Image 1 (cartoon, rainbow, N blue to C red):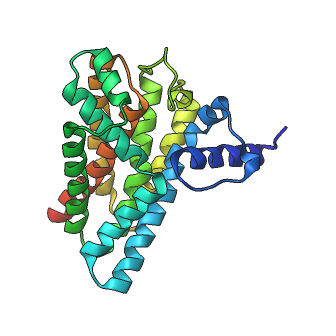
Image 2: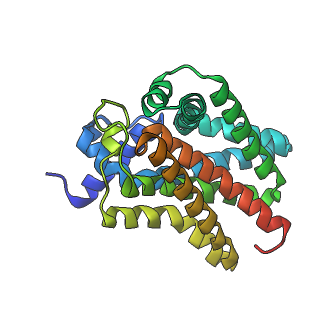
Length: 264
């Protein structure tokens, strides 16, 4: 029987094992139930990914003296770290909902590993928006933006597991173990973990207006979750990836708006 600290370390490393390409010790093991319990640490993966891409951006900017190249290299670092896990989900959602008109057809398209026109166009636009939004921020604000957006966007995706049903409940899929409903306590813990960097930023710089980004992010998640519910009766792993990606780029756009209009 694991002690409390060892159990939660095991769950955290399970989340690292599932959501990133990083190796974990063999003693962590794996089971569907273990992965389900590790879902609460999804936002902490955002800390890890945000920290890596922020460090990559900062190091590349110092070494190369070129902000654009630094942004591209930091994006590449994030994709390498996660294996484009959520970007792939977003592209699959674009293909599925763009090319399908029934639940079965949408789910069938999303399960296809091939990238279609809708997915390619959506992914290109998404990555372009990320790059341009971050490029428009003051250079000193880019790393904090990355550190805020990655945990918060994953917390937004986590809420869909609490509020909606899994659309592939009768199928075997990679995401099925994380699709079991989480408790209110787990939801609260996940939201706290996802929002801590934002709260720290607002407090440290005495900019409470930055907390306003929570409202559009919550609205976007609500809209997407209702849209998925209407068409396929819930969400899939790809849908969670799409929510995360949309929420992430939305945070960058909101921060860009705030800096442009000088209210944060």
